[in-house]
Image (cartoon, rainbow over all chains, first blue to last red; front, top):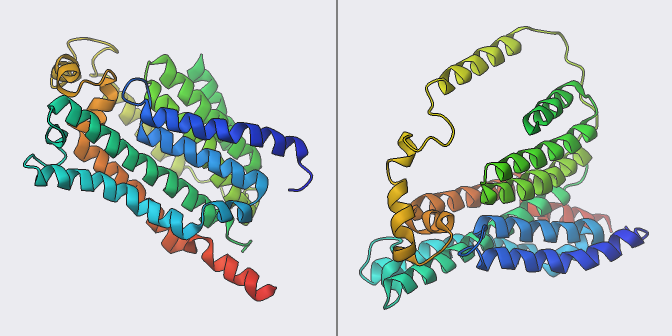
Length: 139
Length: 176
């Protein structure tokens, strides 16, 4: 992949924008279309583009597979953890109204946190699956 | 119009034997589906379809092609059974749509059950302008938790089956 100069320059320009757009979709999901699933997939796609253009070895140096694997579980744990916290605070499971003094602010916080959990898990799973496919040698 | 494009793409996918072209057509198919979702005002779904269907799954299928063969094997003999099964399934599905309410009918069952409550109460209860997000994350939080668990399980399944790329690196180390 050393000779694809145009590809590399364009990818270098695009990848930060894709990742930034993913974060925008993630945290603006309350107000516009989007949310954790979409943001996670876009983030994963941006990272996969990086791996395609600059090689899987470079990409695994940036996001080491053990770290990504931890993130796969981390997102789900964050999501279910928010549910447990709302249980401990005297509400029902995944009832975010008890997370803050004001129910509306509690809902905001809860939704932000669980969307973050969704985004982390989705992005990490996409990258993991890509690494798993790309890391295999021809059978 | 979009639907006819979809049908053309689907027929081309069936007819073509070059799997590389088929993967590209699948990408176009997903992009067309995303456009249809956009026309139907389902922006969130269109987003996901464009990113997953046209983006990531195309890359994954290309990666699979790199591991396997590029052309499809010729079927050994033509048998009418698959065609009959597809015809029967299609006829049943079309029969099932016959008593569905008209598209956008306000008296349809789905608009009478919990939807009015979400639309009327969501701004006060959650303070979030995007009702899709409030339904997905708050009212239907259990479902979303289940979906994330499904994605988690899929990731774990791929890791267990393919080894998460660690095996190949060991192989490379052995070679060098």
